[in-house]
Image (cartoon, rainbow over all chains, first blue to last red; front, side, top):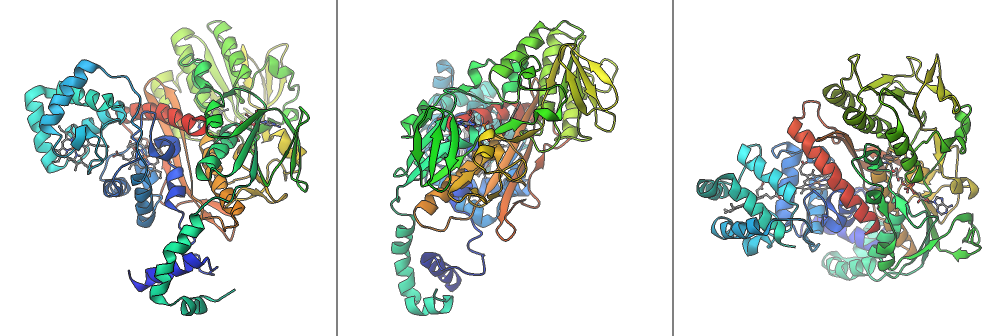
Length: 195
Length: 431
Ligand SMILES: Cc1cc2nc3c(=O)[nH]c(=O)nc-3n(C[C@H](O)[C@H](O)[C@H](O)COP(=O)(O)OP(=O)(O)OC[C@H]3O[C@@H](n4cnc5c(N)ncnc54)[C@H](O)[C@@H]3O)c2cc1C
């Protein structure tokens, strides 16, 4: 810990009023995160057509926010939102959401497609999105996400509007060779079926 | 008070770091309890009650709300177009009860700010350490000649959702094809600045399908409006805006649009220059804070002045005011704003009850509008706080509206996301 941070923490811990408001001007992760709930759900667990943020590893969260902020990741609204936060605030929110337990979304799915999807998942995706996509990993949590949101995510990956991880792309290409776009649809039903 | 230098000397480098954990634990540790009475179980009040219990379950929270069912204004324009039912915008208070909020259905008639007691019409009294007031809006009837609460039984405002929404919907379905629907947006600060134009869009959407010879005539009290360029782009694409067959016509104040009077019997509105005959008239009167805010002496002008870090009244200590009734300028009067303000306020109340300095606030607002089938637009702003000036300020370089070049696919996504927002915000408030 460098001395500047130590100094700041002492001041915080003692609650000593300082004329400089540098530290005071940073809201807590809880405060910042609470302002996103109207779109992303209470404590980051969504019940609507928007992604859950709860349980997302802070590293993936921070990457996503920085991508939105710089414009490298396609967005309808998040580019405008993300630009409102400093790197420090983004990290605080990342830590906050990582610590929340995600509640999978209740949604309708087709069980035939879901079981086809499970097979495809095990073959092509499980390596990185472990435990059927339930385990928080470098792509967030796939299981229990809004299916409509996942449809948009996959469409952006396939159209090239959103950059895909190189190794993921290789697997997705293999998948498309085996089953074309119906396979993607089946995978989405599989993720949506986990509730 | 010890100076910073002395404090560091006293604690010493490494030791200070060690004691940090203990101190920090103490800081955010067990709750201090206390009694909070929340008045008004709409967007702001219900959110505040829920989040107080989430932040600190040792706080006793009583919510006093006049009605057992709340109808959201948001998405009520979709009820007008027939895309949604009234049931789909109705919410009860069982979710809050399950979180340990004591919910009382009664009308608050007064607040004694010195004795710290809330009185209801039913004759009950509720003592508080801190009160949170979110009573919404009231109308300035006198601003429109010939208008009154009684006239609103035939000339609906539908700016508080419920029976007014049903009345306007029924008038639209009963209207003959070829009819004219007048919408008159208010002057001054009012709830949901894009709302009247979303309403015009949704009604045009209904007319296009069922009564294509009819039109919506917006008689405006202003010369520009929220998301104007985006609305007009959508109207051109879907409703023939700008052509002589347009389903929507907009008359700005400069063109004589400002409505000054209404003749309900003859179904005429008097605008600045001429009078217009209509089949359905939707006047949205100018607004002020809800009646209770005036009765409790919390207002200055039309709205309630507050400390924007805590939403505590600048007039009566220990009473916090949020949502539409507060003057939280910087932020528009919207459901999103009220929801976020409630969290800032609840966090501050938690800290104040525990004898701590409230943390630094953060705010956000996004308003989605659904312009037609598969067509959504939005405006989004992130706000910070200027402590010296007590001002809520938009963070520079962030926020803004949907880009005009947005693809139809993006507009379709925004429509889906608007519905996603609705599911999440209502669950965040009442769930
Ligand atoms: C057509 C329309 C569309 C809208 N669309 C959007 C949108 O898309 N997005 C958005 O963010 N916002 C939207 N809004 C705005 C939003 O509805 C309001 O800004 C929001 O509801 C304000 O919350 P509030 O808590 O201040 O007031 P309200 O939600 O109105 O709550 C006030 C509550 O207090 C109760 N009350 C009042 N006085 C008393 C008393 N004396 N005793 C007991 N109870 C009392 C009332 O019964 C009511 O339940 C829209 C509004 C309209 C009219």
